[in-house]
Image 1 (cartoon, rainbow over the protein chains, first blue to last red):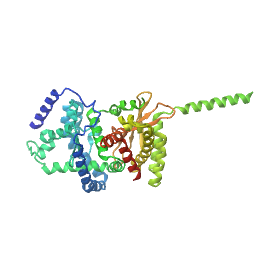
Image 2: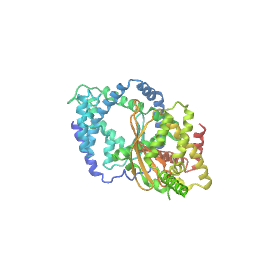
Image 3: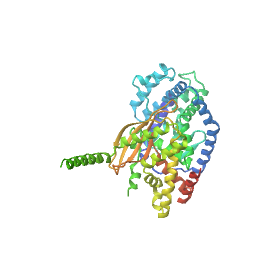
Length: 256
Length: 197
């Protein structure tokens, strides 16, 4: 718990130091490490073909209630990162909503497998992470990065992941870092199992979409980069109305 | 005299019907074409037959030339007249193949139109959702409809869960051009290669 408080204070200090909100103005893709990124991307695609895609296909053969339950449990666990980031972003309403969801679904929902919180009026909201909080604080995304196995990221989002791995993620603290102050039941393997399952669950939900994208792209690397960066921008803006994230400027130049 | 009166009435009714049909509501337009596409996707036709039918829908409902120009971004202004003609032809073929290829994998696609937002006289955004299934979560799809000519609205972009397909395409094309020292013919070569697949 001390680590989380230290992290929150550190991030609030960063917020005080950074005054310029940069995300709105960024339109050009900053791919400073493109050559290296393309090599890593090719490696990840190879791993996907040999490992992740076949595993995801196998996972898809499991009965639907098992997949839904797994997905729900992982989503419930992600609240441990989302809640502190709701607070960092000043979104106390979502923090309260997600805390209620975490408590109800972990207990009545049997470790998050079921989602009774929804029927109590606590609806599911968007996930938040430290990369998003840094973005909300005005930290620019920096250069695009492709991480081995983990996939697309940016310098800012990678810093966010480091924050999570160094005290910001309570689930990581009680498993990998062995912070047994409050909970003793979990092992390091539980953390990695949840991360891998989360990746497989995501891949399984996007099997057709990714196949179609792979088959119909002229530069798959650039397509994935564009989709990742657009997705992060939208999440940082927390835009409910999608049109907010759609820039009219580019379309308007077409008319001239 | 009665004949002339009746003829005038008929003419008036005909005129009213024509003018009513001239202005098409963007939501109804999206509802109609998504229903048509959904019917094709869930039919027992072969994939090739589905692709042929989907291409016809896309040709009639998407502003392919407009999307093509948007997709070129800043390189649009550097094209010669010959290149413009070549690009227009190549892009149309590329778009129809790519678009129908992406859609044909879904055989249970049902879209529900939710609402619309008039942005200005040129654009209306139609909000919809792709209804989820056991294997696929619900997906929000927003359609950027170009309404400069209200009689013939045309789709200019699809925004899936906040991700713009036109913008993705633009960044993809831009990447190819930039990685070839700004040479637009490299993009043409890539498009030809894709069309040969």
